[in-house]
Length: 398
Image (tube, rainbow, N blue to C red; front, side):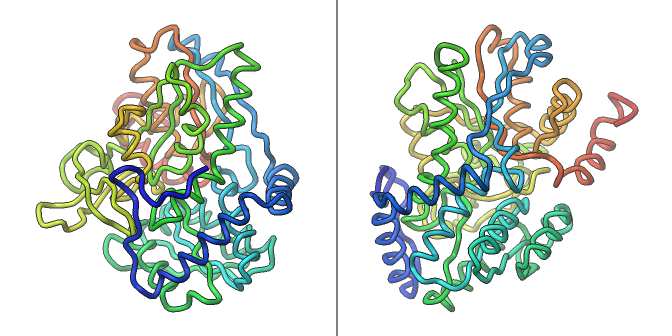
């Protein structure tokens, strides 16, 4: 665990003066709670009895035979609410209660963080408001309805590109207006300190479990640990379990969208540069004047112009490698995993699966652990429509 606001050159606190005191209050509460046996015991109890931890690792027998790559999945899709997001929302929800907050606010892209925040709020008896871009609300309507059913008020954001970037902006503005009674439950390893560290701490359970499970099952460590990277919380959660194992290659897979032209992707490390967005210094998609560029991905959860500062540090140090996969690659992987293993994964996770499939020849004979960060129920309508267009020439059917 760490409390340094910087990941070498990245991170920091770039926030309005009105948020300095709430951020300091949050850091103090987190530093106290992470060493408090009562808090940790309650967090562990809820992860086990409510969220459904530990999640298993699954061997992909048919995909392995097809690729000649030993493919294993860390099954975060089996958690309550269908994704890794619940690990963080339960943790931050308990922190909010500990600080005496009455309301949670959050941003959401794919809707999984919004659903998980609404779930934690219902569980803990807190009010809840979720900010969601209009574009994401349209392509993730099932999660929009789930949030409402759970008692959350959902505010649709029409500004800008009406996606995750704009939802975060609105949520941060709302927190600035009411920092005393409200906790902003940020969903990824982003934002001003201490958020990147807090979220990584709560998500590191993924990597701890995965490392122990792989050693027990395989008798050793995997050659590669891979995960999709939007903001990057599921990837950091996995990577933190293997940072001390130099023999394990860490691979983060960004959204290559429709190609690397400006506005057609969300591959920050491919064409981005260091800059500041939403409270921290990291790699950002921006033009020569520092204006944030629009992004695109078939997956709403990867459709964001910045990446977590810890990822920027890991890339610069060479400890992790970052690649990107196109919409078409992710859609093909979405279909392949369903047909070979009977697992419908989130389109976000499908980017990591797509990277393994596309690089099977160079990975032949190796064991690869993929963090399957979420299930694909939320994506079905959107994915089927996209598959019909992108893959029709190849298959003539879905």
